[in-house]
Image: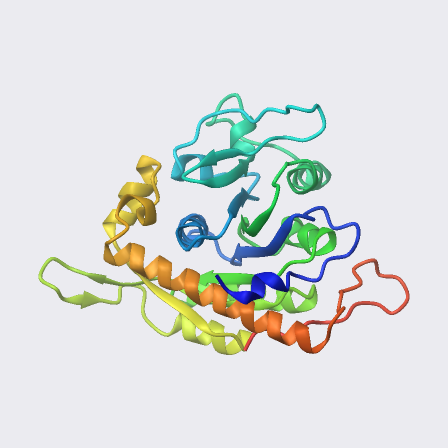
Length: 297
């Protein structure tokens, strides 16, 4: 395990995730780029690497984690104060999908209700001691990301894109939002980078270069280029992430390599913080204002 875990994220006294060493957001300004698939398999890969891992489905309107991890159940409270997360494959899980009576029903909430639910998922869930809590964020740059930036100290964000311009045009906005609210960008994942047909011919169905362009804009590394592979979709629909279902396969290796790169980026940021011990971002808006942490190099 990386020694970055000995130097956890700098958190203020009122941070709701006191037992969590690192909080990693998986986000994008664009829908349909594979954030949930990336978040699920990244969390699974971190767990496979020996890290105590949790996964929070912060997409209130479109929760995917229950399906991708094959979990159907309702969280309970043993002490009447905190909610016990569900667990699958050794990963602690929470999603609004666990609380819906009908998984096909829509969540029709205004911003304040969404903010309240997210607050509960951060503060009232008994996450316990974790090395990594991975958050699967909804598309866009709205309430959820802003609430997280205000409520907890985030280690960094993994930005997910696909290669084509119609995706990167929105993803650039997500990077800009991270800069404005002091969320360091750990790196970029280019999803659906290419497809290998049965004859072994590589097809770049969505073009190429998008992930590199976003990484250059973010001044952060391109962590991975993940190809299109039918097994990822099939296993996700069956409720078993490909990292768990086919751990020796090429796709599992791709996500394990991604996890290693994320750990390296977290370690690099920890080294940066070590050079400025005691650095804590003031998110209160009071005297002194905010202090921006640079993106990971």
